[in-house]
Length: 284
Image (cartoon, rainbow, N blue to C red; front, side, top):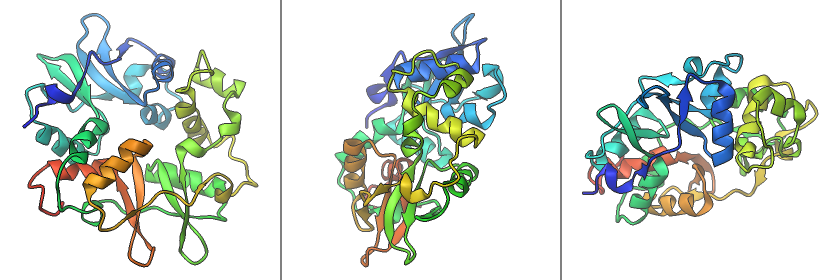
């Protein structure tokens, strides 16, 4: 079986402490990342991990040491891919620092493991793998209601239903406020140096999600959602789900039943259950 060292990214991009929230945001923006390991400037030892969502959960705090997650869950290079998948699936995290003697030597993400699952033969289906309660939105619901609900539920996307309960769209944090992509007020608040970088688009929506300041009262969910979203059937193999996620750069996909009804959402972390045990057993 492959080890973590076989699939990890060597010498990952990091941010240092002491440092600020803006330091982390700018590194994420420049490199198109959504999270980073945090190392101590004096000796390079891993001291935590920070994601864009960590920043916006405590947006009034500027010191990176007070924003980051301490005591980050880690793994060694010699650990198996199965062990990495188990940690992701159980702990519901999206980046796993790889350490040797306390020093950061690499990082693993769910995407690294999706490549492994995409080439597997497994009887596990999308229906088997769903583990979370599905939060939905109504297409004519005010965005000012949906966004706080997304924040409280800590979900990056919601399936959108019409008045008959039919799936008609999906709303993700990537879809929000694209018309304000170079808002000077947001740039100043975030401390972003260059709005021309693609990674800026990954961070900006969460500024609005955190502050509620720019939520247009007259706008509805249907004004921002992606219509007719890609879905998978409940009996679709998780290997096929992994292929779709990789090809489309999706972290989640709505799952439908035999009458096209919404069954739930399958996330990349759900798919990883295929690596945690017997490939022909249902996910637990």
